[in-house]
Length: 76
Image (cartoon, rainbow, N blue to C red; front, side):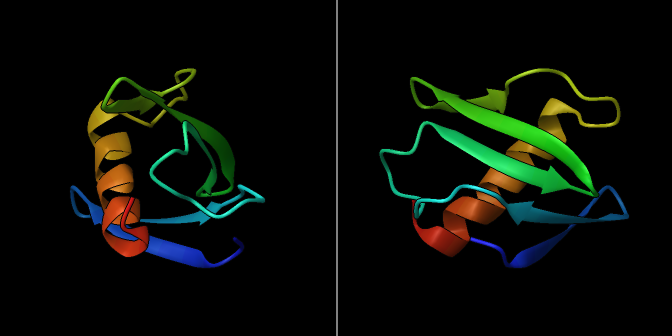
């Protein structure tokens, strides 16, 4: 995808880039991101999105905010 996206969460600015080669759709099960320069994978289990492996400084609430931002932008 390549475009940098911004998110303000708990008064902190975060920049993330979607690394998936294929377009995001409703069938997408994994989103590969570069969050503030660190790799992050978010996976969909049933209808819930969560961080695949915990990363220091990335809470589930931040991951939820990122997914919400992506869902609104890409209508997934």
